[in-house]
Image (cartoon, rainbow, N blue to C red; front, side, top):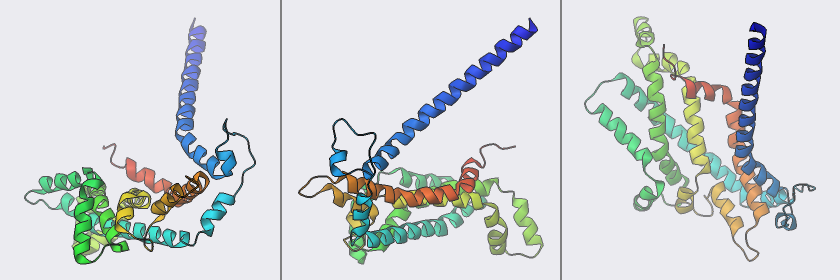
Length: 284
């Protein structure tokens, strides 16, 4: 009887594990299907894109990628995206990390109200602040510049950085800083040489999230830039017009090129990203 119970228990465990793996494979396929479909369209000719029924087996072509790289404005748009994204991430970290440290370490009147007010700014839809920002940048002469887009992105990235990093600072024992003070370090030295190295996973996680926000945004860049300062998402919109209709091959090829740098960066920083997003989830 015990042997039969063992066999039945083992069989039920195997069936449960098989069901879990099947569900995970189905979910992975559902999430990857749009990406694989876009990659497939980027490797088709115009006739193959509009084939009915759709072609699932074909000889891939690289002419769409050659056409995208052959555009005179593609290198400039890539440089603009790189400068704007790195500037927004740097500015958000430069301001947000000390602000998060102040929220975590210094008790002051209205701290929680100010913190939730900062988060409320993050919850606003971007279109709600676009017109005021455009008027403000017009008054100070920043319209159609990269600086205006950097400031606009930082407006929404900064609350995210403060929210993420405040939890890291609160989980970090104060005794570490106090030990550095006893050894003769100032508060600034303790912050830079003791605290910051210990919260590196949080910095990486916040950087990746801010990078995704700035790199993929279309709305602010479409309104606040011109042909010389537009970013890659705005350049993608150029493939949706013309006398021949939407250039699906060029649009999907440019889309793959847009998401590729973020995917590579996220993959390289995967270890720090997972540690940063899961830190503090379990407290002992």
